[in-house]
Image 1 (tube, rainbow, N blue to C red):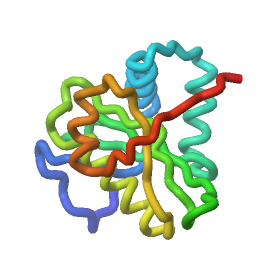
Image 2: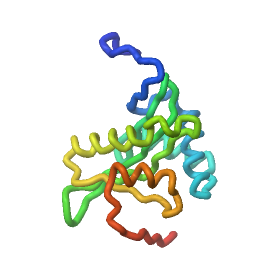
Image 3: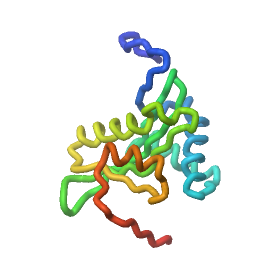
Image 4: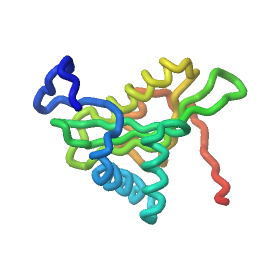
Length: 156
């Protein structure tokens, strides 16, 4: 149901908000694109589990970016304890539909996650990307500080 007091949507305007039930199919396409970028193909059960987590918003959270009401970007994030600061917000997944790139979607999603984390008294928002992801890093270098850490992973 639409809030009658809500401002009308401006054509071409970018909006950020929660995922809606009707977003399921497009969200899965975007999340599959994100995983494919990193060389992963996920089974349908993975998407079912992730969707339930994101829409439950207990442990992990999601925001949606829309242009003209169409879902064009997603951000998935979570909060965890820190030994050296207030809780940290980890921006785990960020993806923009190829046709919407260059329109401020990634920047707006990062800002929205940052606002969300700030409202919950987190000490920082952080994320990782591949060193070779030059396109994303151009944005990241504008909105965040690269402290030079190298990420190591032990697959289990």
